[in-house]
Image (cartoon, rainbow, N blue to C red; front, side):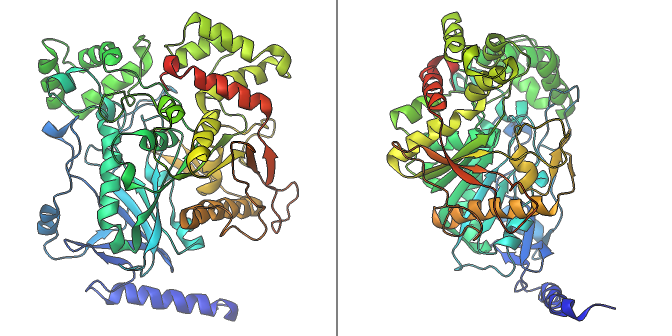
Amino acid sequence: MVSTRFLPYFTLLAGVLKAATAAPDGSAPNVVDLGYVKYRGNLSYPDTVAYLGVPYAEPPMGERRWRAPLALNTSRVSSEAGGQTVNLTTNPDFCVQGSTGAGDAGGAGSEDCLKLNIYAPAGAKKGDNLPVLVYIHGGGYVYGNPANWPFDHWIHQSPNVVIASVYYRLDSIGFLTVPEFETEGLGDLNAGFLDQIQALKFVNEHIASFGGDPSKVTINGQSAGGSSVELHLTANTGRNLFHQAIAQSVYRTPLPTPEQQRPMFDYYAEQAGCGTGSVATKVACLRQADVSALSHAQDLVMYNFTGLYNSFHPVVDGKLFTETPTISLLKGNFADVRVIVGSTSNETLSGGDNITQALKEYFPGLTQTDLQQFLEVYPESDFDNATQRFEVATGEPDVRCGRSIIGLAAAQKSKAFTYRYNQRPSTQAADDTEVHHSAENWMMFRGTSTGFNGTTTFQPQTPQDEAFAAELIAYWLSFVRAGDPNTFKLDRSPEWPAYTVGGKKRIVLQEPKTNDTSISGSIAEQEPRLETSRCAFVASKAVHQQA
């Protein structure tokens, strides 16, 4: 027997489900009409719909490999639908994955993956003009599956926004590079990033049908997604497609030149069975190759290629990017929008214990003079132990200094908010007290713990975790809605100070020391002067870092 205190909920749920199945003409709260096709989404909460796998471009297969995405052929989609409402209630195939480098083989996924997962309030319609969040996932530009970072509970918490999560080409499928792509017209550089731009174009054209406002788009990403946000801020194309930005743990990876990627291209082509002949012949062979051969080749690059530039990433192509992002930021050549930017307390993307070796591997362009200067800027005397020194001396240039570099640049033009994320997952080993890279993803996305080949495990969260996650989501969506994380924050949450040229204040995001879920543990703090000066030094090395 159902308790009477639950009857209002069950009555509402029954009504919503009845409406969702009783109106095939498109008036159901989980059906959207884009004009050329109707999609039925998954009613994941009574107030939330997830449209999983909305195509935003033509499949980039066959001769379209390593080409810029083609805008979606809506006539084709309409014809294939045949007047029927198309079900988008399960997650689509994700993009072909690369290896994480942890001994695993990549290769899962599909090339036909240029889709969006769109989350909207149930019944949202054209004219509602809800602000929009477009999320770009991380994974080093090598792997990642948007299904591992769902947003249903974000909409359920705040059913006054629309969220779109982007699938984009990865690893060699998205970022194969050789100069002849441009000089001989053999392909397009930065195809995976061009996918993101095409997704934003689709959002601008069609998000109104989901209840969204294309004039209120915030882009957001973590790690390589944060790097992508930084690149969108500084790219020569697409700055008009968004209006605010949230960059989490910006992956400050080098943007090499196409020529610097040539040795990796040659190695890759050889491993894929396409190593003979001219570049044109090799590319033609690669376009004919089975995707399994390409996946095997990119794994061999990950594990065996010994060149200095040994990963498939965005490059300075002379079109989208005529200089690296830090240079653009220092010059003031970037989109004039409000930003949130931050990192976790202890993250570094480097391993080992040799600072100069790790920095040289991460930033191959650093000179011996640069490396010696890094040791001088990060002296032993400033740290409690060698482990802490290594983490800071590599973590700041790898990731953390993106916070102050972007924050300072944005503060000079518009408004910036920065943060230090300081909460480890409750499932983390008790003797590991540090807050590592991606810790906030675990909190904000239901305990997601990503694995190999697009998989994840959703680990249990405590009531304290769930309360803290709600606090984070409220800050994020307040910024999306109002350009300020404070406007719609939870009542228990402290004021998040703006990051200014003169003030340099930020928020520390963390749970309270007690189990009381009615209070917040987050506090404001001053950016330490040593960190400010060290990150200014890091920014001064942007030319050699190529970041």
